[in-house]
Length: 314
Image: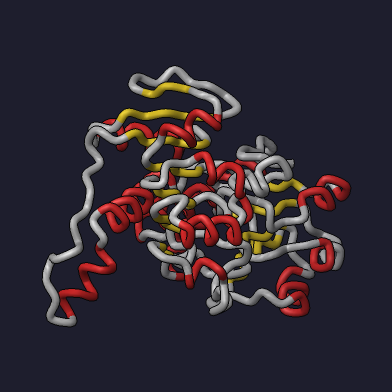
């Protein structure tokens, strides 16, 4: 069977090949690429003869998949799979697996990086000290004693909740599935938005979550509250968020995800809004998480070849 890594996975090529050979042996013929291509003609050329492909977070749609007659399995080296045409794969009988769990630590770390950047005004502090300024007007706030709202309590959301509790926060949670976690109080979404000083989003992108945080939801939040989105861009209405920031309806936002993958258009509404700390979808990206991800990829492929696929989306 032919296995194609359609892009680098954030680990050196020789290490990736060594991991593949150790786990998969000679059961597959492996092709790797040392650059990332996202255009359909190149993806078709790279995928055409593959039985199994590995990709991360670029669009992989019917236009490409339909030109790959041998394709049996797509291993998405990412948690979300909304960029892959899952419905078409289901019709074709193509197995789609993801790599849930590899970025739990990394994403949770960045959540608190964004919270602290907002709470301690790190961007303004950096600017001030470089321009000969002082601490005047740069008084921040502490996490201890604040209410931290977690929307979605999967693995990442639960880790964020536990870290928030360790900071001394009261932790509220809203999720489809309630879990018994010490120090976490489940409430409805409106209550969470009204009572939280920090709201952190950890839901997948689905038809039900697109626009989940819009004008009405933002209006429920405290004027001193901040919103953190390391989930998916379309979960938040960016226009409504920008308006809420301009009007002072909420105090700030930490945003790692947008409606599209970076680069983001310079005229994006959040770039002109006050008190926004933005990062280019890097929450998942640490040296450690990349190695974890590659390991899960190999496990997924090994299980598929053994007839016991895991992390199956369809």
